[in-house]
Amino acid sequence: MNFSEKLLGQNEHVILHMRTHVREILLNIVATIVLIVIAVLAFVYLPEDWRPASTVAIVAVAVTLTLVILVWPWMNWLTSTYTVTNRRIITRKGVFTKTGHDIPLTRISNVSYERSMLDRMFGCGSLVLQTSASEPLLLDDVPNVEKVHVQLTELIFHSDLSDQDPYNSKATEA
Image 1 (tube, one colour):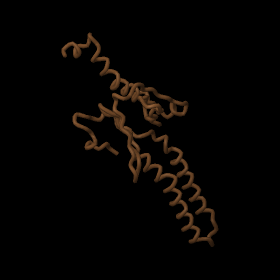
Image 2 (image 1 turned 45 degrees about the vertical axis):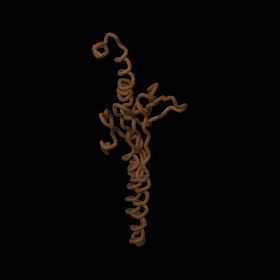
Image 3 (image 1 turned 120 degrees about the vertical axis):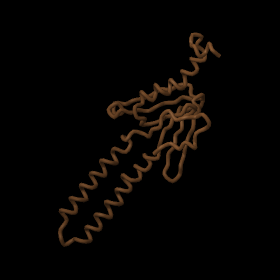
Image 4 (image 1 turned 90 degrees about the vertical axis):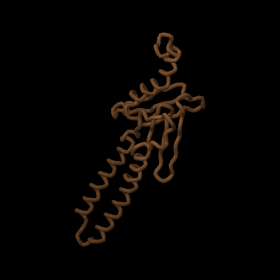
């Protein structure tokens, strides 16, 4: 799902656009595969004289559980995005009720990340954005969190340093 350009301000452009790591719905995928295997085994091993009622019941239960276990979480995952622009960090989520949070890059005072052993195995982690608010903003399951951390650090702190650096050719030309 692409980020709508109409949500950007004048001279604002997207640096990164991502959704949470697929690890978020991995257990749902595995559970759905197990559900399908159980449904097939039930269809094969139930007595012949229980058909066609057992077939209808198995299909109805399997479809309902698939909607609950896989389709709804997948739709939530698909619509949950993190976007970094040259001015702000934008979070959006929700299928029917959309919610979002925008943080100007100028309000962020610290960027850090956390990676558990499981996160390292999947190549993701949590990004922690400290602002003047008491609670930091935690972005969970960010793919390639170390690279995103470096890019955010460059965006937030590099422009401040280049303005103050007397050896920077751009700063001396001003």
